[in-house]
Length: 91
Image 1 (tube, rainbow, N blue to C red):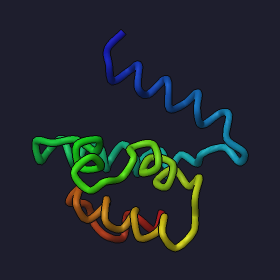
Image 2: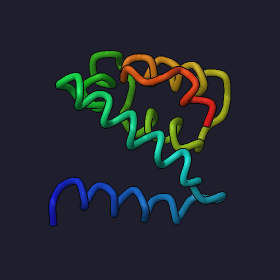
Image 3: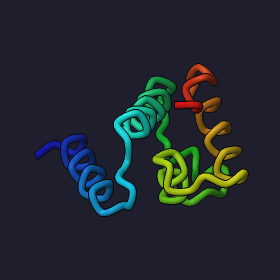
């Protein structure tokens, strides 16, 4: 099993345990964020480490597990750093 397939499987399993479950739009945003960093030659994990953010917290915020103002600000920062259209965060 490739690493990408393995990660996707783990995310789906984690999503199934959340209440409410993760929407397809939020999952797509996470995938687009990851792809945006890869296009720049880096990763979401590397960005998080550089900015003092736990990757798990960034992922949880993107997937909608946290919806407060700090989470929304973090999502804006990540979407911008990934080089995505700022409207993507509103999904």
